[in-house]
Image 1: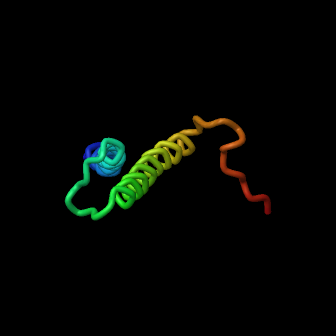
Image 2: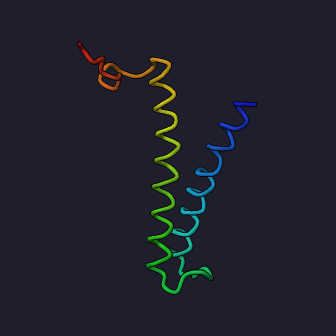
Image 3: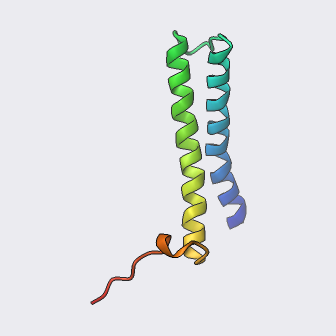
Length: 82
């Protein structure tokens, strides 16, 4: 059950990133989508959706790998000395 929830959590930003790519592609071909009034606004919204979606998925994977100790030494968490 936990894996299914994690998959759903990853699919939502993945779909947002894919929709962002679609918006940017449509702007390239001059296709204006209904909620936007200008092509530049459409491109910027697509860029924001793409960066946020990709950043969330990458951060999720990085956090998981860091917990499992599968990252390079420079990315490992520093232990606080007392």
